[in-house]
Image (cartoon, rainbow, N blue to C red; front, side, top):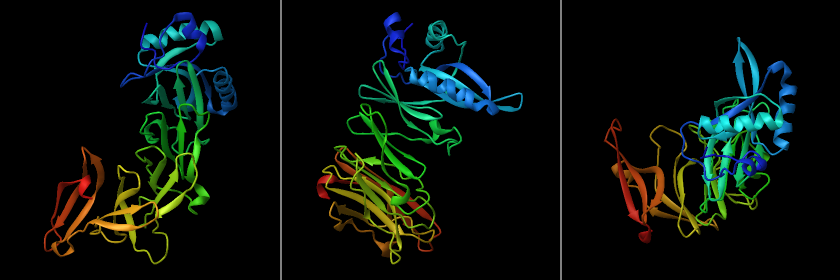
Length: 337
């Protein structure tokens, strides 16, 4: 009985002496299902969920279909083997008085420095040692339709002790030591109903988070930066004004953190996939790093990444009739930028 992934009650470890070590990289995770109610009795199932959560158990809910009718399941714990889940289930049923059976866990686990982040179908949890905390609850009903583990993409901070994530029209950040996730940006701040895919990117020190506001065809896209603790939000590359005709296509933090490298393109038209590689500092000053050769029908496109002292990007070239496109990988030393 080893490899317990997530602590669900301190007394469990005291009784069995099992380690709550780092999450294994498992393709299959397991929980124990402790309750199932028809969706018409959702309030009853939610009461069980809240009671177990408040007692310190990592608890979550997810839908099921039984005899063609919708039900709600309540599950506890996350383990990397069905044997560990079964062993815990015996302990749980003895101490809590609820029957159980072992089931596959529809969750996603991200390892962190000193713990784990766990995305369940209805909430985000943290785990440190024997302590688990529900730090963010998804909307009810969730906009992802209980598919959060597959849709919520956690971006770990450089020190591995926090994550940032996009949810609906908002961006959040939370550390292992935090009780609740903090909203970095979203909603009325942008004057928009939704932000489509603002994947957050941490700055090298973890002080800032950068993200874009739209990922839609023929929509002007801006680059936003905020402090990771939720302050000083601003559009660093601002394409919202009516006179703007461009959209942000790709970006990456410079290792010095005093600027961001990015690619913009004309917002309309199928041929406008990329452009020059540019740089913008925290005061908003833009410089061209590598100019695309428009006469040669050349564009630079993302993704942009910095690795081994180089900025990696891609070069897109069209033939004279714009019928054939050729994409090749390219790189330039960071020291030359």
